[in-house]
Image 1: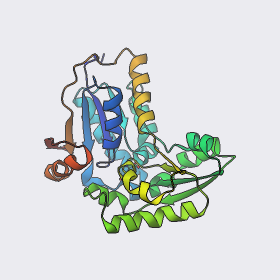
Image 2: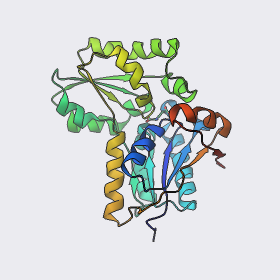
Image 3: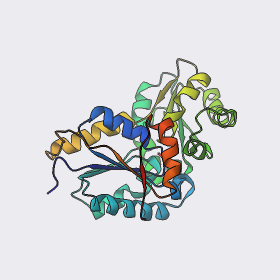
Image 4: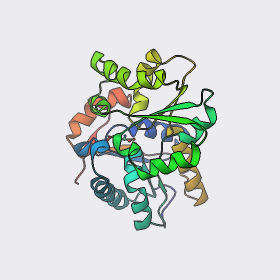
Length: 265
Ligand code: DGL
């Protein structure tokens, strides 16, 4: 039986999940958090679902060995590839996945055209097709895979001219198609909000699901009597690539210095 004070494991292919970790920490400041960045295997967006499933299995086993009471897949691409598999493996372990915000976007759009920026893996998945079938019958959805963005964000680049040009090339066709709502369907992309604010008109809504994931974690923990009562321990970080590299970008993406350990996987 897990204890309230046990940590929550949060993972992503790299640094993207830090955008979700921030929302979790904001909503649930008493929770002790473990973060795994699978930087040795990023980007997931261009990898096969099988490959991603194996990585997620290994990381889930690592979190369980650390005593985690729950796991958050802070990655849309990992969720489409692996969440069903992990739920089958660990039916009693609270597990939160994430998906692009198609439902709220379909409800919010006034132009009837919604744009989705996400990885190739997410956009090509059956799970994403099912999401559109379920929630987007009355709107037009224009999808845009964004190769190259994740690698720049991994390097801590949130503002270079090359990044701006790459992003502009992905966003412009969505605006030209009449989208008034843009979904950030990859957890790396919320880090680009300041850049997006410069290229997207003020009446275009830009939405992501980080805060919704934090609320879902809260619901799952509460339903099992597992919400922590604090105080939280310092968040712990692991990377499957060079820990120094993650450590070097944390001040940019997490706004503080933090030691990072090597993930033994
Ligand atoms: N951050 C991930 C997502 O939400 C994937 C990025 C990648 O590794 O391609 O989809």
